[in-house]
Length: 307
Image (cartoon, rainbow, N blue to C red; front, side, top):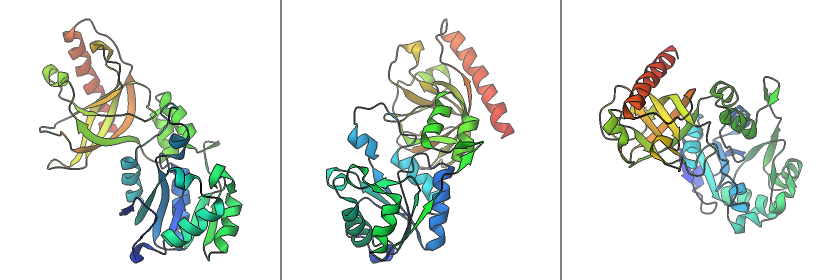
């Protein structure tokens, strides 16, 4: 998959794409439906924005993103996307009128041939452009447009906000129903305090800054090692939270991979949250903590083997 982080100077080979356009936070089933419609009209591309416009306009707001740009790109690649236009959402882009956005970005800059969006899509300065406006403006540029209806799961509209609600409750099964895949956190392994190694459970630590986090606690997880000599898929148990046993207060994701030996520092992992096991606790000493970790790993292994 070719990734562009600008909208000018796109190679001729990547012009003429049929693009799905939106933020695609979570790449849930609704997003996948829009993408599948776009795939019917030519070489498949995605037009999205980084940072998320909400982060640009309200930088002090609570973390809300379901995935970072790396995780989104990884998921889109699995869906067969050939070209990802990850447009820098800055003041210049935010101030383009709907007419300017279509003419300068979609037509002249990216040279797209077709655009598919959700029926509730808004664009341009102050979100003045609606999906119907996109149709008329694109028609004037020789670009066809398809509007996709919202889809439902269990009688509920599939949306990123509904996925967030399920994750906050630790309801991984409902989140998976709406996403069409396990919720994942992707990123590089960073150096931690190495307490897990001292306990006999070395963990891979990952930064979760800026993300809407699932319910804190211990999870059964699948872990994909995406880079390095130990690339592959593993089962594991992960702790997501602030580690109250050690007086921490910054959220962190630390994962213990079963049947794994090696160094993962700076390698990239994708952690799939399968089932919430328990909340974070403070234990009466390290022996009690180790006993609980033993039980957590045994429970996680049973759950994951069933999948």
